[in-house]
Length: 150
Image (cartoon, one colour):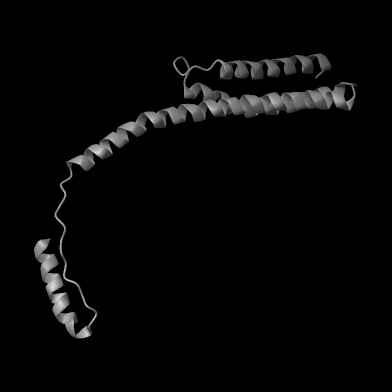
């Protein structure tokens, strides 16, 4: 691969990343969906790998200083992470919207159920004094009372 071809491929890679950045900035939940975001997130690793591969070839062929080369790599990395973070943020925001929509209906349902439940009168159970001589009579009356009330 010559330097012209490497430069052209890098432009294509940068263009792909720019398109993803534009998508993230212009995302609208009415016209876009989470699947579109996920597809782009799945494609990001291959874009990164391709960049590393082509950039390494270009660096071997290019005679510029290491600072310039490292700066190009750092700029790409920074933009790459910004795009990935934006896409992940969109997914998180969309998922939280879904949970907000379902949560109120759950709370309405649970309060509705609580209002329809019948409250039973309190039960006055026999109390044990702690004297072991009274244990037999206590447990017998306790069992009779609880079993007959149940």
